[in-house]
Length: 323
Ligand code: TYM
Image 1 (cartoon, rainbow, N blue to C red):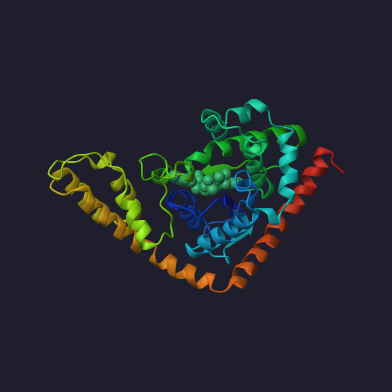
Image 2 (image 1 turned 45 degrees about the horizontal axis):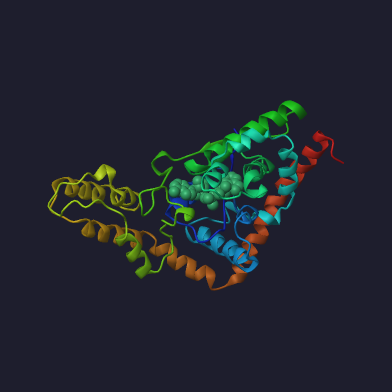
């Protein structure tokens, strides 16, 4: 069987957090040894919310550096900027014309927006269609994502199947790949970690900021001596992501035994996270020292992405009667 094509994206709306890392970046980096991996910085998607041009440009480069620092190897995987292949917006339009409105009305990002009383832009409403275009343009088989993106991959599958029924087999129907243990990383307040909930822990926080954030993790008010339940603790959930199994087992036992306060456990979590990301911080500093390195990686990524995208668009236009 041919190597699978793997594809995923991340929005440059700020710096990546632990949810992005464990939910998508780390699994994506593992996939780079198992197939042809394509990862992109989704600046068109970020434009639904970031309307400061300098910030959008800066975040796009910065997230690309973060991904490389965490282990994305540009020799193995293709790293590119979404807008370097603007044909994706053409495909998004064609797919938009096949998309029933109720399918998008059912999507959670749009529904959350309405629930908060905000007025969604058309871009936010149509966002899952642009995501489908990303996935289908590159004939992707596997899409590593966190659980919050599963619905969007289902929209993509529906649209691909519909287009294939109408126009012949033009699209590969993709599958999501979601790692169960990290499908939803929780944030400082116990909800899903998300920039929109303001509860994130960034991958590259300053030491002081990281310590402060960890110390602010919300806990119950059990006294030090009380036995505590590790299964419901955000501290333990986050510790499981970054500490080895024996350290986690010890923390769980000490939770159950009582006698230690949450502050002690938070300190341990801080140390494990700080240590885990130390090599990434060092690599990021090296990469950031010479901006031409990133320029070259993104230019090469754009060329490799276009080599797949342009023939797909030719095929799609021909099948759909455009030009
Ligand atoms: P974005 O930028 O919101 O998030 C990037 C990836 O991080 C995952 N993630 C999480 N995983 C576990 N726990 C969390 N708390 C958590 N928070 C975020 C997301 O599931 C995602 O995989 N629409 C996408 C970007 C995108 C894309 C695509 C992805 C655009 N086109 C095509 C795949 C294929 C997004 O907003 O991701």
